[in-house]
Length: 249
Ligand code: NAP
Image 1 (spheres, rainbow, N blue to C red):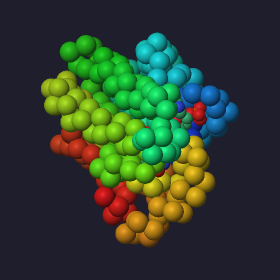
Image 2: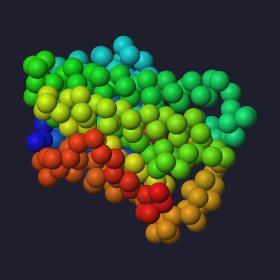
Image 3: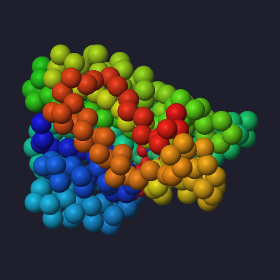
């Protein structure tokens, strides 16, 4: 099924690659962003150049009121939502847990866990057949970090992605009869801006040595898995998490 797809954090990185590929696969796309309006508008323009409809909508996914507004504005602009990529996320500054302040922990949990739960909740409210929706697909952004643990740098981030794995499992079972499939992708080291925000400019170069395939991944490679999970080709798949880490598990 194609239709109307919301991509949270669609202005850059994996979200932007997903928006572009979704347009090529026939989706109309809502490009959510937090602060980078020009990047979001560029992505929306790229969607339109594929002949699909697009709208860029600002909203902080850590704020419940913004999430609720995003879904309402999306439906007003494009119609009934049938797909959601729960992608907006941050790493927080990297450090040993013993040296991590509460503000960092809270900011990561507020967006990556609480925000993702609220986005998933609104997705169900808008897509569940018993609530007047058309059914659809939710793809949550987990991380290889959920299994590796983030030791030495990003334990709050890794723990937040562990929560995404559990959300995916639980919600998949809860809404299977509502015509909604819920899955996750679990990327490894993907070339995006996110690594710069950890405070270690050499993060990718340092960690790529531990990747069996010997290279980083691209946002486009993650987008392929996301679009497959949203497509009828995966019609019997729900509650799973696809590892996209070049063998770094
Ligand atoms: P990125 O390049 O840093 O892009 C982040 C995107 O999220 C931007 O579009 C940004 O919007 C948006 N965003 C940030 N905070 C937001 C908020 N509070 N509300 C709404 N949007 C917000 O990140 P990425 O690497 O593509 O990561 C995307 C997802 O994949 C995240 O959940 C991340 O944890 C996960 N992931 C990434 C990797 C990796 O190696 N890159 C690996 C595993 C998992 P603005 O442009 O407006 O700032």
